[in-house]
Length: 253
Image (cartoon, rainbow, N blue to C red; front, side, top):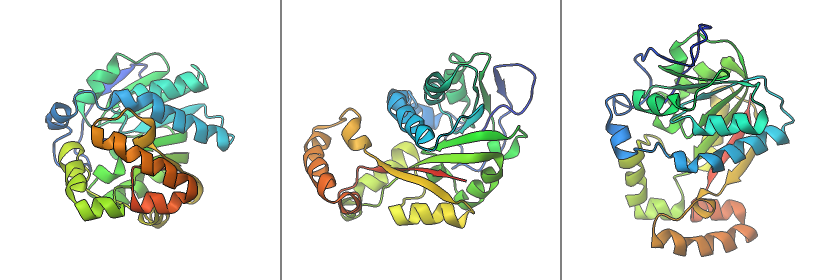
């Protein structure tokens, strides 16, 4: 879940997968694709809207943008559509399966590359996207420190797995490890402290409510929406801490 277009060959899709700092080989041996064949492309429009809202709040006008861990490339495509087709957008991922899906979305200014972003030489970016990625990386602090100098602003989407009810039940956390490969699990505080520890300055942070905004995957999720929605209006921080179902969208430099 990392990497992208470092050369200027003009090719829209390239491949030079390298040893990377992401968990095991499940991303390169096809196991992750077997468990998650769509690479969550169905969630891409929603995630792109969160990114575009953050870019607007900060008044950014990027001319060169990349996504580290781009998956099937649909988030990056939708972000480019929301900005301008002239914005150079480079997507990087270690999974050959993801890049094969992304290849169909490539164009003159939307390019994808298979490999480890931390090991690829690239131009400097105005904005770097790292959405639901570093919780998969064994050396997540080293990864975050390595990507920080590569862009002026980085935008992170970080799942907040450690709510009180998930810790009490434990099964949801283990499911995240088994199905999507989360190696690290964060509270709001530890997520923000992780970025600070890696040298970032936090510019903007907002909750995102995937459990409320995205389609339900089970009847249990439909039922859980009601208390989450009501409680969040009254006590957002406490709701995130106790009931979960939220993530953090953080802009930092």
